[in-house]
Length: 306
Image 1 (tube, rainbow, N blue to C red):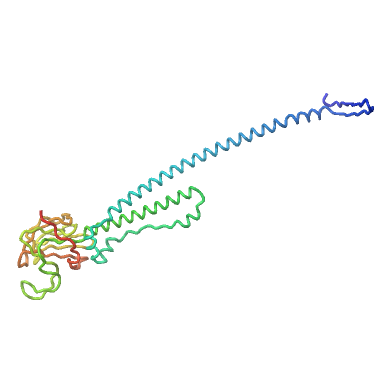
Image 2: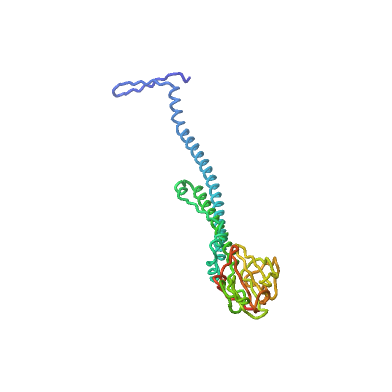
């Protein structure tokens, strides 16, 4: 049926002209079907594309939500680091304050003592210039910030260690007078009060009343408390960092070897034991085994006895 051919005759009655057109059924039907199918195919293509676009948008949304979650987590982590750093900064600031008198005494200590106390800590410093030039994404930014905060935290830890060491040296610096009274002899050459001959005097003599309290001039550990020749009853305190103090001619002790003492603690009483001509305290300071003039460190008066 579809292979048949049909002839259409069109006649003009006025002029008598006759026109014929032969058509085939199959090509005509195919053409009609093609014309009718074209809008359908276009619609199907548009629908498929829209569906594909929607699926892509869903995938993009899921990716963005995951990235946002990661960014939020990274931001919270950085916020926690910053809060921790603020706490460290506050702590270091609080610890860094020193009594001006003690600070002045510390300045008079030998350089080797101060170097021993402050050595061992190095602050971490890192440049971010190269990293900044290489940043291409938010991940790079978070990575850089994390790196910088870690470096700052490390630097602050080092600074805190140095502050702690400095504070320990401050506590160990003999900076107060060990007893109340009047100064009768300084370090250096002098006439011996017993023999009358010239001799080297190794410390300070502070005259006072019998039984007056004697104070530890800095924090430390009592290494000995006993009778020792010309010193009579003697206390030796090790303050670490190579610093030691000696307290001689004591009447008695209120501490024993191994005791921990703080600056201002009563450790004994003024006496005249050993080679002494009257009631007084003989006081010495040693730095790395060498005698140091105590006067250059004494920036505070002795405590008042209770």
